[in-house]
Image 1 (cartoon, rainbow, N blue to C red):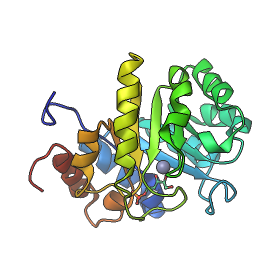
Image 2 (image 1 turned 90 degrees about the vertical axis):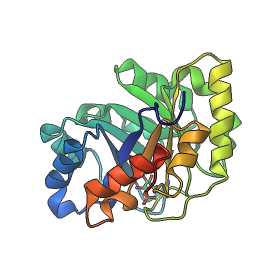
Image 3 (image 1 turned 30 degrees about the vertical axis):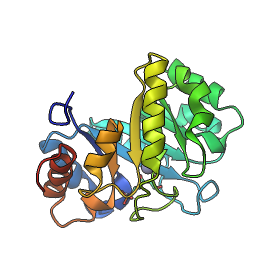
Image 4 (image 1 turned 180 degrees about the vertical axis):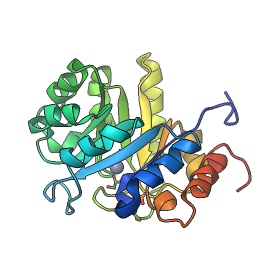
Length: 227
Ligand code: DX5
Ligand code: ZN
């Protein structure tokens, strides 16, 4: 399949939005056909930053029907799976490095009837999660150190995407690959070419004065069209 045929999924990351105006911004993004919303939960322990938790997600859920892609950057995420499920998550991503029993956490997420995903930090080899592929619907490859928006994309992470794609094909699975960190118009096509299915973008969407034009620009660039 050529790049032009592939549906590009862009998941804007709420971390960089203007929280005073969040509802309006989500309506705008929905109006151009975006279906996913990436929600970064940080605990100040697993990563050196604190964001928001279940009450914020629950409140957004009441008025927003986008697919909530909840990225938990928290230590021992097993403590909070039920809470984030009840808050309205459609996908819950946990970090491989944050728990002693990742398989059990992923299975617990799936048991709830929602999608399970595992993420790895830049220093973690992707082969470490091959043994978990049968119990997750998505793998999130971090292309920056988790914790902050606005960092520089690490191009080496695309090697992980290629290896992972090969492994998924060998295991005859349909696991989705998501990438997060520093994604913008300059690297979106390279990510898609390497095998990424979902692009997360925070500052390159919400950090721009016209967020819908920014999102459309990334999608166009990801398809290999002129920017
Ligand atoms: C960082 C978060 C990202 C962040 C990405 O740890 O996981 O989702 O919002 O922000 P940008 O796109 O600005 O790198
Ligand atoms: Zn994220």
